[in-house]
Image (cartoon, rainbow, N blue to C red; front, top):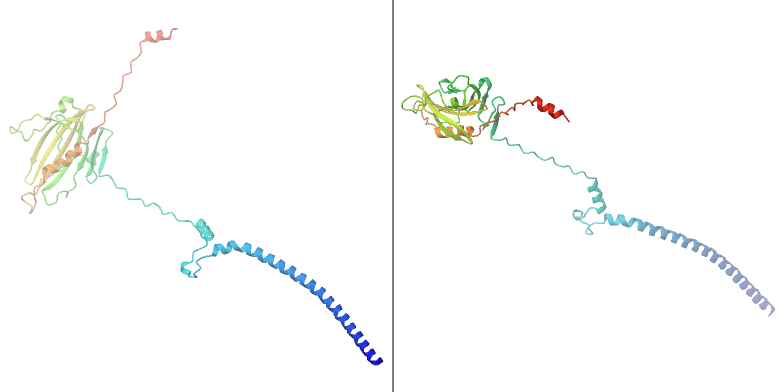
Length: 305
């Protein structure tokens, strides 16, 4: 009995000791685990906070790069912010305005300061002035002036280009301006050459015509050689103390001699020359006012108070 009691008591003692050791060990690990768990929770919380901040900061980037969810590269759109930045930084080259070729006017203005004459003529026609202004009759040499007194000076001549009327007997045509400062207004109304249309062959009286807004006197003449013919119209006007002469001339050659040559339309040729004549303007010279001396008595009287 005693032995059994001891054994039981010893066993109980051993069990109690084991319980005490186990409880102590359990209690010790629980504190360590608690500390470890606290540290783990603290680290986890820190990681969660960092992850949340990272997600917040990455949201605009995710929005800016988001595109078509279908995954098709051809349908994906560029980021809005990237496109805006690219558009702002892209320099669009401005194409230089293409200048259309400037069309030159069909007519050219001629103006002579010495005589005050100006007129318009077609750009395709040839202008002669100065020493070369004296025109030529077709096959008849220099064109003669039709003033009743010498002193005429050639100002300018406009020549119709050769070949202007192909297939015809056209040889030449021109518009000529001369000026004579030695004639009076009454003398300017007459012509030295007789009008060939006068059946009597004598000097014919000129006709009064109005060209544009200018009153003029006119006559005509016809001359011919074995191969050429020349028809000429003369116009006179007076202004600035001078007589102005305008010659419109047409020369023909080859009709009846050249095969296939037809007579040129004389009315059409003279219509072109008359169109130049209608543009003629004479610049009026300024009238110098004579200075009248003030009477001495008036000056003296004016000086008195």
